[in-house]
Amino acid sequence: MQPIQEQTPHHSPAAPVSTPWWSPRDLTPGYFALVMGSGIVSISLHLLEYFIASIVLLSIAAIAYVILVGLNLWRLVAHRPAMSADFHDIQHSFGFFTFVAGTGVLGSRLALSGWWTTAVILLIIAAVAWLILGYLVPVFAVLGKATRPLIKWANGSWFVWVVGAQSVAVLAATLEPHLAGARDALAMTAVFAWSLGVVLYVAVAVFVALRMMTYPLDPHEFNPPYWVSMGALAITVVAAARIAEMASSPMVDVTRGLVAGMAVLFWCFATWMIPALFGIGIWRHVFRKVPLVYEPGLWSIVFPLGMYSVAGIYLGRVNDLPIVEAVGSGWMWVAVIAWGITFVAMVRTIAIRVVGRRAKGVL
Image 1 (cartoon, rainbow, N blue to C red):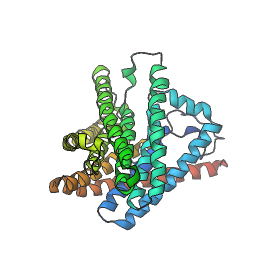
Image 2: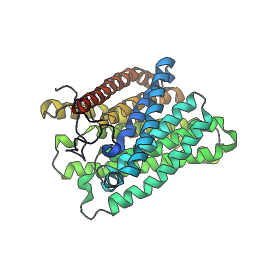
Image 3: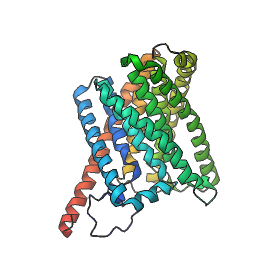
Image 4: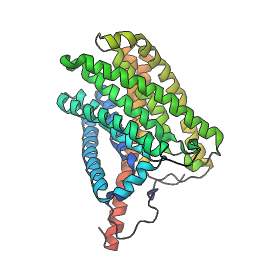
């Protein structure tokens, strides 16, 4: 296995030498997975009372969020054709949902520290963005694409659509106990988003499965975002566990038993998927010799690992399942190690790029 190294962005294989290394032109839509991964590992650390480490990762997630929002706004203004190309590309457009998921995860972590007002603002941003993107992405990337069949381009990044919905559900359910005046609205939002996320997961899973069974399997196409298929299940478990412990309300009372039962089912399925995903990684990098390089998509592995840990902890505590909680607690270290390796690889890539540009006299 080759060491992690820099990978050229997929949509700009030959960027001009005059382009600054910090230009947002080639920024991938899915880079908010950095916020997702850092935020969820911070939550896992907080739940297990590693408070200092949790605050460090929360700070990194918050700083990354602000920087990425700024870079994306810059890209929208200065490099609109590049962003539009990503938005119309069905293979990459679902990456925009990482903004929704990153916003929701960051809000959930801030809520754990009592930042209620900020968390409410992030909930509004995440919910509105998810609704807007939930209609625009399918219209522009799916219905607007003349080439058929569309299943040919189905990939793991499509599951981020589900993660976005469930991140809204988790944040709404997290805020519900602390905002008495808005409990019914938050309960309805949580159940509504959770239900849509479950239906979308089934639909996306069918599309991706059909693509895998219909077209040849290229190891280069089994990229890190396929891990989101497991992460989407894990966050569905977290949302369900949070909904199950909410106070009585018409929407919660009707669905509480169903949601709690399905949480256990989804956790079992997510657990079953983990060996398969590791196996695909071994097949891809060891047997098919695909280089293991740093790419923003690696954060799409960190997030599911962290979310699986949080799912086990919440499900175990809410349903009094000590074995499940122990699995989630132990898995936290897997997520922490994955976060550390990926973060170091990212910093190393940026440093190499900076040094290279300075050597050429281009900044």
